[in-house]
Amino acid sequence: MSRGSTGGEGTLSTADRRILQHLAASGADYPALIASNTGLHIPLVERRCEALEAAGLIEPVTGEVVYRMTEYGRQVARSGF
Image 1 (cartoon, helix red, strand yellow):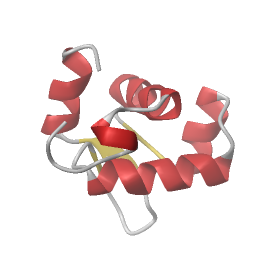
Image 2 (cartoon, one colour):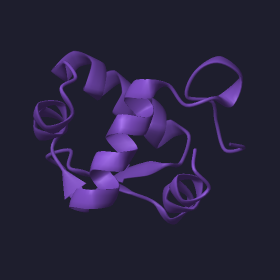
Image 3 (spheres, helix red, strand yellow):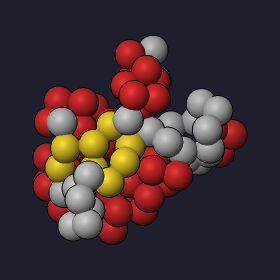
């Protein structure tokens, strides 16, 4: 990962991977629904989505904060994280 760091030394956390896997399957979703579908807590999902957005892996779709994967995020997911 080169666009930004999501954690220590640019590695993806388990939560990051679960969020990206969910968005790869769903296309786009609200943080609360991402949390519900991944078993993660909402505050954690919100923090990790902000970090993933800063790293260029996901992007907000609407003003209501619905996220989807970017092309860069799809490339990272295809590489097996």
